[in-house]
Each structure stands twice: as C-alpha cells, then as structure tokens.
Amino acid sequence: MNKKAFVAKITWVTVFGIAMAFVESAVVVYLRAIFYPEGFAFPLNRLADYRILVEVLREIATIFMLLSVACLAGKKFWERFAYFMLSFGIWDIFYYVWLKLLLNWPSSIFDWDILFLIPLPWIGPVIAPVSIALMMIVFSILIAHSFHK
Image 1 (tube, helix red, strand yellow):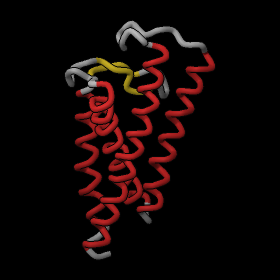
Image 2 (cartoon, one colour):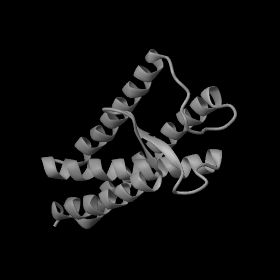
Image 3 (cartoon, helix red, strand yellow):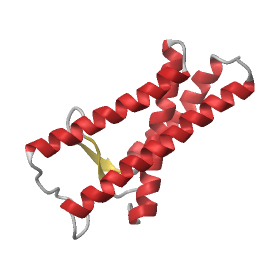
C-alpha cells in the first residue's frame, strides 16, 4: 500500500474517533444535566440498576464501533489491533476535549472521573486515560506503518 493510502486510513480512523468522542461526550452532557444538575462531583449519585446496565451496554457498543472501524481499516490481526488502538486513543482524548468545550470540564487533567464501567467501575484522574491514549496512538501508528512498507 502506498503512503497516500496509509495516510488516508489513518485520517479516516482518526475522524471516526473524533466524531465518536463527540457522540459520547454529548451523552455525558445530558446525563450530567439529569443526574448532577448542581454539577458533577464525587461521591457519585446512586443509579437504578437498569440505568447502570444501559451505561455498560453503551460502553460495550462503543467498543464494538471502534473495533468495527479497525476491522474495516486493517487486513491482518495486528494491523486491525493497531487501528483499534488508534481509534480508541483518539476517541478517549477527544472525549475530554469535547467535554472541555461543552461543559468547561475537566478544570484540570488531575480532576477525577469515572473512566470506564467494564468490568467494574474505574475511577481516577483524567491524566491517566489521556496518557495511556497518547501511548496507544503512538504505538498504533508504528504498528500500522509496519504493514504499509
């Protein structure tokens, strides 16, 4: 595959990740307005079991969407894995970019957040997923590039 095709794949996977991040952050805008009208803070409000299930299923659906674009972009397992890491990393970073633009949150990369619900709730500072996402992006491009030489 030539350089132009490789750059196009990276670009479109990135665009998908950015758009998917907006969808996710828009949902969070509504959830926070409904469940945290005074502003999001810990400790978390208790949600009904079915709402927690809906949130877990939404996260699973997000993973499948990110995986789907990776499967379309790559041919071999490791190439698909690279594109999944790219889409996930971009999505994760831009999720916080969109939240900053839409809610002016987080106020700092050290603010705490619910990072993920699968398999159990992960809670930590925003810098943790952003740092991991940056590494995922770098390694994903290196791996994907190795398939396009």
